[in-house]
Image (cartoon, rainbow, N blue to C red; front, side, top):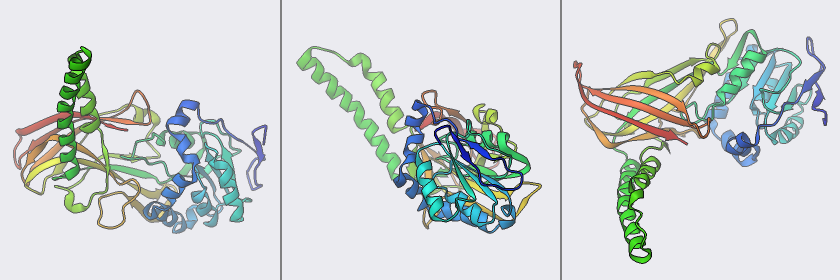
Amino acid sequence: MSDGYAEAAEGPGLGVAVKDGKPPDETDNANYFCEYAYLYHQMDMLEDVHRTGSYFDAITRNRDSFKDKVVLDVGAGTCILSIFAAKAGAKQVFAVEATDMANRSRKIVEAQGLSHVIHVVQGTIETATLPCMVDVIISEWMGYFLLRESMLDSVLVARDRFLKPGGALFPSHATLFLAPVGPFKACREKQQTFDGERQHFEDFNGSMVQWYGTDFSCMREEFLAEQRMYYLQTGMFVNLSPKQLAGTASPVLEMDLLKITVEDLKAARPLSCAMRVTKDGHLDGFAGYFDVAFRGSPQNPVKQEVVLTTAPTTSTHTHWGQQLFGFFPALQVNRGDSLECKLVINRQKKNHRLLQLDACFSVVGPGDTQIREKREDSWNLD
């Protein structure tokens, strides 16, 4: 395929040629795509039984949504979703994979005896060429806190380029939740470590003055700002249980993937929600997690809706876990309080696939309109 073209499997209404896309640019490949070319990373995701099982259920329990349909798999990886779709009766599946995992996925598809149905296309979805429009787009695009990695952009590009009117996306809807978190050891440890860095700098500067006659005290505030960002203003991966929450979760962002646009995602519009506190004490932070739902489209709804959740659980966790952002110092709350949040999710300037959260939290007592405590801060999600 030196010319970038390959023969497509024949079928009603299909063309005869598919054009591979261009590879990701070097910077984006180094920052994001490269790790997806490794089998160990693909295996880590495949072994997430909630993730893989939910997609399997959504596809195989809704065979009518795939039977005799043309399907596009965006970010196909090992082609596991393409294989599910083919086994559910799809007449043609285009599996688009930006990395060299495409070479391995061709072998996997061939080993399943599905090369006559699944056509692997290597390159970014933004530059790949398909011979026809598709009935269904499947993709596992979700990152930490739902939006990290910004892969949803590519799914929406695929939708606008290739999805037929009335076509369906799997998943079709996504919801981001926030929940208050009670006492949490890792938050206290981060505060202690940051406090220790204050003394670390004083010891460092004293040594530099004593032994080398050079005073670094002009760098004290910049050093502490660096350390604060690293220890106190960066989200952390956690696997929470429900009992570690100090209140009810609340949806802060709900998306219908047939309607939302890339411009909407980039606009960083203010979001808001209110969480009800159910325990007296203090809040060490707030957690973010997501659900995605497989509902099909209004014209082609599924027979059985499936929901993949990354909510705190006492059973097996997903590989996404939850993201925890600390309050330093902790917020004091009472049972029945409302924790009101105004949130802006920005893309980091240094890497658009990473996030920055700017938030304002207010504690309001039951029946009150007066704010008892207010906190504004920013956190990075690297």
